[in-house]
Length: 167
Figure 1 (spheres, rainbow, N blue to C red):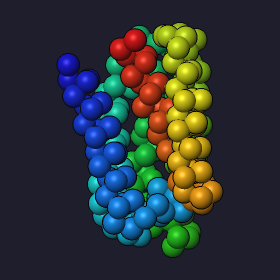
Figure 2: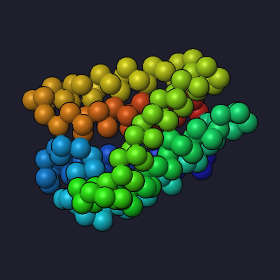
Figure 3: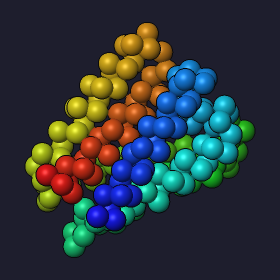
């Protein structure tokens, strides 16, 4: 039950933050660009997402030899939030970009392993999330491709967790 509460809290926070940004400032070039509109609310959001989804990811992979991939999927999100001012360059930009890419790649690895070892239907979250993100991209008149790619990543990760845990 606790895992479900954490999962739903993270999902609702992500939806709420995304709606806030979209309605107040419009779709941004990337999710991280929303830091320059929302300020430290972006940093808080990255922290909330990290802590909300760590338990579901770890619970889904309990006893698996590859459980560490769960940590590689979600922990970098905290670093994305801490190094939010990526346009400043230098170390902040490097930490931000490496963390974002690590999380994205690890989420795909996690989904592949979850498909093999937990539930073969887990992989369905990838094309489903990608299709929804692509539709958003088209509705957004083919702008802000990074924003929509990041939402595909969020979607396949969150969808994969739900399938692995509850289907």
